[in-house]
Image (cartoon, rainbow, N blue to C red):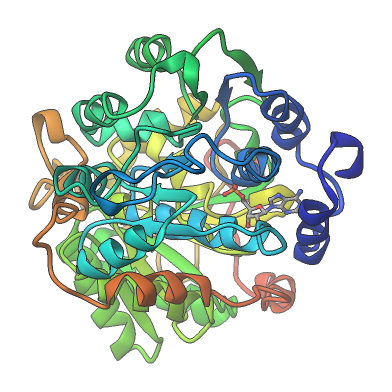
Length: 465
Ligand code: AMP
């Protein structure tokens, strides 16, 4: 199937071709015709499936084909109304989607903007006053704008709720309901909801915000994981950093996203890796938005070789052709393992995910293997065999990243309200996210050659690892 056969206009197709997309992904094949027909959609799709283009391409086309409800009207509070709103849980995801909207819509006459917390609100206000057709937002900062009458959502034509499950996980349900209350009636707008999973809560939210939706489902939850080469190294906790540096050097990994469990752990590991001669940066909720944006841009441009992240900071990160993900520590929630490794092998590419597992994490590893219905191969590097005299200890979590209603919300999002640090400002955050650069031919070539140098043991299941 081709993009032409989906009914997209010449302007949209031109941008798609320039992006280098030949064939629509399964979610795009299914969602694009439905969105073009004006119907509501409830889609189960994870990041990495191409869902952003799945809703953005038809959304752009539909908006370009109608003049907009508000044309000719007087503006409330001097602010032109927004035509389409894309609501996302994290700032990084918002910046990425804004980038995609600008890119796919470059041959159409639209104004788009992104608003999120952690940066000064004033440039965002100026932008909104000038008029924005498509707004990409995180809920907290959007509500700040609504409170200050610097955004008008009363004429909204299309609402996209992206990563709805994460939005709820992060404690945004009340904020989302408040946003819904600012919009025209459900029947008077088109509504698109995307979520990786459909819990009871998501279904409740869907029944509130969707009008007779068409269901769109693509490959099951773990399909992305099938294209990822997954490996486990059993290693003592105190030697993980040393082993990580060795693997990066020996296997010549040039771009590695490493997950730690805590913000403090992320900082410490990045510092240690720097001392090992590897350019590294940490990204987590205690970092200013400016620092997060810089670290991500440096990583995407291959100036930073190792990006050390906590789960929340890494949510939704889309890094073109990221070849390597490392779990320096396993996540407590097995589903997070799938989200983490899904940062690689996106859009049909392959990738490698390595987990460094100490004896304390044996149960977490079993839970993950149960979830993905697969036993992961255990590898060993000479000189790094675990010390059999070390006994398992309970895992200490350090400072929790949020409790109760805001479970998982953590400080990554807490700054989304007005009055957050006045960092680089809206436009620089946007353009820095955009300057991710071409992932092109990224350094995967040397891996196979260096891989066999290391001694391999048999896996615990008896398979050769
Ligand atoms: P998403 O799931 O929307 O975050 O997209 C994941 C990645 O897939 C992004 O880097 C997109 O640029 C890329 N992508 C989206 N659609 C296609 C396509 N049809 N062909 C190739 N790559 C795509």
